[in-house]
Length: 395
Image 1 (cartoon, rainbow, N blue to C red):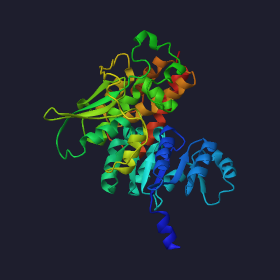
Image 2 (cartoon, rainbow, N blue to C red):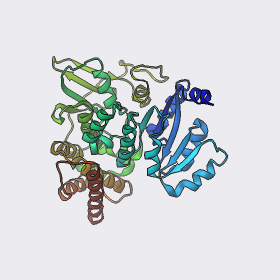
Image 3 (cartoon, rainbow, N blue to C red):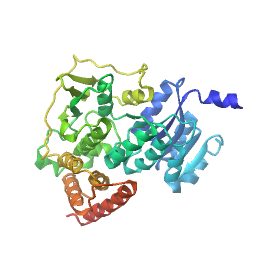
Image 4 (tube, rainbow, N blue to C red):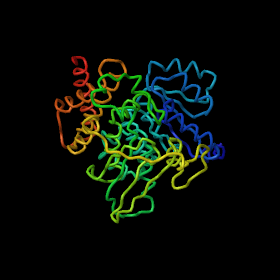
């Protein structure tokens, strides 16, 4: 029996938090392509029961977790003929499953504040973190980085931009980073005037020109709040002040980001827009494995770069303001953004209302310079309450 157990776990065991989302489904593609090296130990979803059950049947994980407890019986019914797959429900179950001994790495691909708690549990369990949930570092970057250092839990970024930065600094040792060049596609409204933004619809905003992502992150990309969050994330991941992070609009999404060093040299990572590449690199680092897919052809198109308009894209400016203020302010911004993002998708506010409500929430919620986990939880709840009230009274 012991021999069978050891054989079963010779492959790297991966827990995918948010397996039914865009990142999660592409991670499963990577696992499928390299099934001799990787195995899905656990899959989790929030509400998508049928998709989770379908994934469980294909990838045969040891366990599945549905965060919404109301969906537990439905999931049990869908997998009634698979007694080998353990079925759990609830957010606490996600916190617990990431601590399972066989797990080698945890891909945190959940959306929003919900990713914070399981990431903390995974770090404390000394797991390798493949970080795709940017809100974790936006909300509690200082806490996560301190815990990761104490627990010797490596954090490998999965966002294409942060993966590019990570790949650019490999081998550079203690060489000083003079500037991080964080690229952004500019979203669907890059060429819109400020006056046109008030009339754009969610259908317009969901038409991203280069990436295929979930609704929440697609809207964040359209407002450029996503890029603001990536600035905050980069600060914590790479120990660089926000003033040394420059955002560049790069419509082709070929240069995924770059690093400028003290001697003026710039190193960048280029490639076609394909999230499987940074996902696979996070799984395999420091090794590189073959990945089927399109290859970059630099003869096909020029590479363009533009400065972002912070007056037009107020969310990006607010994110810079939040990280400069520090404390729990990024947590406030994240909570308010989650509320207005959902409000916009539900036609409860306009595109430009989103930044207005976030800014007002920043002014109304109690600010504190020193924050621990309990502070972040309380701040998140208060900011959501304030933002919801502002959304209801918005005219």
